[in-house]
Length: 329
Image 1 (cartoon, rainbow, N blue to C red):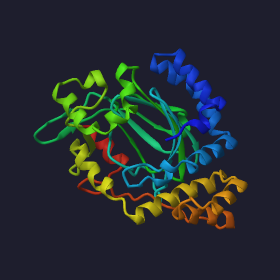
Image 2 (image 1 turned 90 degrees about the horizontal axis):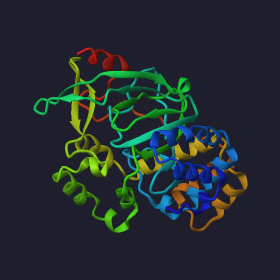
Image 3 (image 1 turned 60 degrees about the horizontal axis):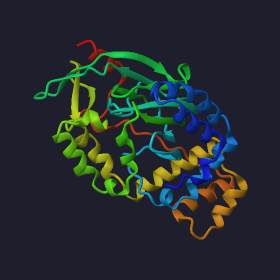
Image 4 (image 1 turned 60 degrees about the vertical axis):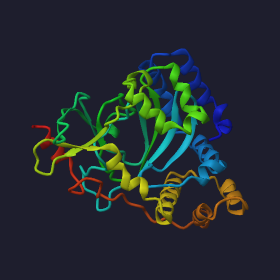
């Protein structure tokens, strides 16, 4: 994706400068927090973020699936990624419904500013997870329970399992990712030749036992959920867990994803009237997106998209109470 339209924005320049000054990643994340808060309250800048994405052919031509969280790209380089993620509310909302499995982000540190909507509740776990490789029975310890409105910006450290619960209202977060430390190998992520052989290259690294050198997960990476019988947790292979959502990418999923993006734009008042009139008339603008531009331009209210409570685990869903009970074992 093309960064040029935002690279010279003062916010981005300040973050780039901090990245160059602060090699220690936790210090960098802490220093960036005030900037994330500023960005989240600057509608003029956020409108330029929307323009940056809708002017990007790569963004417009991507295939959405149920695997990838609807997002707007802000900026990235070899050291950090800055994005907006959008989280739909749960229909007939009740607190404590798991949005997905318990998971970690490998070697990445994540700092999040919950700048729009209700925000969500979350749990953090001790990274020392004990899993029986034969039965996949797992023991996990909760280390922190919080709601984003009470800890904002919030942070999830590398390798720390965590879970998000469905928000009460449509919510959006501004987030920054970085590896836990700067590595000489980080620049390989943006190498187009290596991107083409990412899968085989990852397997070679894992076979050589060099995961920690490159900051990637081991070959057997798990997601976790509260066991249906209430006795602790169960692990599920990450590839098995994600396979159904990665495969769900038909036109109905494209439409749901686009509707969610434009619902956020409308609710957050991020549709610049002049620019949206330009989009409606632009010959190269995809019809699937133009439809929702026209809805906003007409002043109609976009119908809300809700998150399903069914996820890829045997019992279909689980709750905060299920997790708290499982953690007793």
